[in-house]
Image 1 (cartoon, helix red, strand yellow):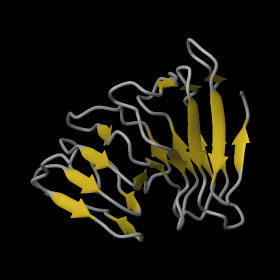
Image 2 (tube, helix red, strand yellow):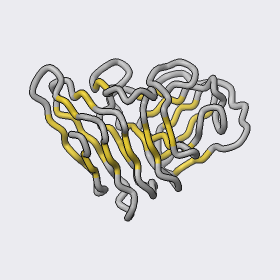
Image 3 (cartoon, one colour):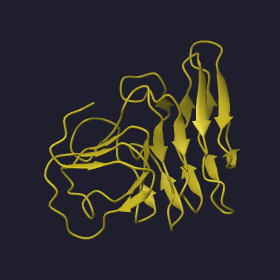
Amino acid sequence: LPSVAGLVKTGPYALTIAGGNTCPGGVLALGGILQADFGVGLPAATNVTLGNATLSSVSGSLNAPLGAGAGQVTILPGLPAGFSAVDVPLSVDVGGAGAALSWGAAEFNPSALVLNETGANTNLTLVNGLSLNGATRTVNVNASAAGAAAEIAGVIANGSAAAGLVKGGAGTLRLSAA
């Protein structure tokens, strides 16, 4: 696990961070839902690392790029991680350009992409497509409350070889451009 000099969030519940905050160092979420926005609840220079956790936004829009730098999101490889919508519908556009996420790349290799973890209570749209890179990948929608569906709006592509997509969890997943 990465060394974090700031906040470590554990446990299955949601934590909302809003308003001014001078949390030094990064934020490591190892369970549940972290709801915060860069430059509002989180300092703009903070990195958020997710492992067995999801990130949500107070504003309803999340477009931080993947990476280990300031204002970026790190997804720990081999662990389930992703995004959740709490109290406001959430549009996730990783990197802000709608580019496909290349599953298996150094910056994006979760064991499962989680779109709406248990505790999410409204709809989430992932704008980005997914490149499965010739493997079978899993997308979990664990929230099963009415009105808490997840949607992948981007194209889902195999990559260089035959691939598959497995949907896990009790919630609803819509594929609108697959």
